[in-house]
Length: 291
Image (cartoon, rainbow, N blue to C red):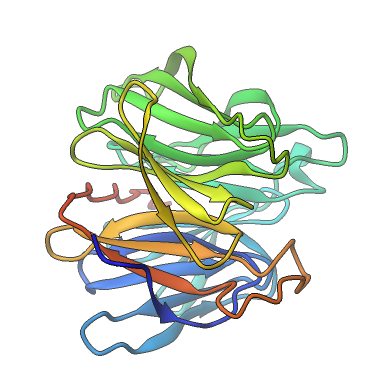
């Protein structure tokens, strides 16, 4: 495994949601509070803006037709296609003072979409169906974050950063339902500000978790045992994904600081990192929301 290399030193306030675009052969990622999506081409090293909005974007998926499905403030969901925005959902009443956070397309093309906590400290997990209908899946969440599916698509991992816990559920592809929640792992480091953030699963079924305020990414066995640690040169590590022709390139996002602020003086804070490995990841699912 190679040492982490900075491939884009754009100083993202909160770099997030790295995802490989298999048709364009680029890595996409997001700066949440300013609502900008970037693209990095590993063949020529060029970074460009893919989308620039006028509000925060908590997460996005790539659709089968290469459009982008954007999850925004107040529960708004929009499709960016051919340089035009189309509304899927205007607003969700219980999200009027918060925003979406991490999202993931499921094997059927639906999207699990989590949220940041509202002013009462409540966060949620929703499921957006392919017809544009949305339903609440989980409440009593602290802060909804990284998700991933086991290689057999029978189970799904879910991160609650505030509770410092990653849960695992049974997942039903036909209905999209989650059941039998149990704890996969709890972060027990003494640093109370270190929390699990973004997550992905490799082809061997091992879980990779980005550690916010931990300056690292950790790999866990299917039984929750830490087996590997990648040290990064900045503390606020947000998420990661596998990419490239063989899905053996890991891209890792990071952050300058809390939303709307620049509090981190580390020179590589907010950068996008690349690590080359012999471990293969899995392609992310594409969403199929075509309303």
